[in-house]
Each structure stands twice: as structure tokens, then as C-alpha cells.
Image (tube, rainbow, N blue to C red; front, side, top):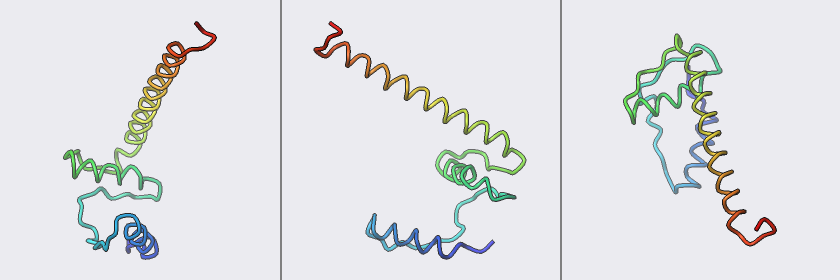
Length: 102
């Protein structure tokens, strides 16, 4: 599949504005799985980064349904943990601040 030229052009513009580029497009330089549909981009991208940084196993389309469930589970767990932390901090702050609760 050819590179999406318009998307790369916009990305280069953003990188230039945000990080004072210029940046070189090295093309298809990182080892990555090959998707067989148009819905796995996010999971394949995350796996590409995890493969490069943490040496995770390479994503394959055979495991896409399991990967979707795993990512859903990780995101939900992170959200629940964040809600618990923020809620406990909020409740703690309410109890420790001068208010009608004392």
C-alpha cells in the first residue's frame, strides 16, 4: 500500500510547528505486523511501538480479536484505577478542608 502522501504532509507540518523540525520520513523502517483490514491501525501502531521499545511479540492478524479484548481490558482497568484515585483524593480533600462536613 502506498504511503498516504496527504497525511504525511500534514504530519510533517505539525511536527515542524510543534518541534521545530525538519523531520525525515524514513519510510517503513520499524518492524510491524501487516493488517488485513482498515480497523486495526491503532492496535498495530501500539504493537509497533511496544515491539521497538519492549521487544513485544510481533502482531499478527490471527490474534486481532484477542488483542482488541486485551486493549479494552487494559484501558478499562486504567480508567477504573484513575477514577478510584481521583475519587479518593476528592473525598479526602473534602474531608480535610474546612466545610460543613466537620
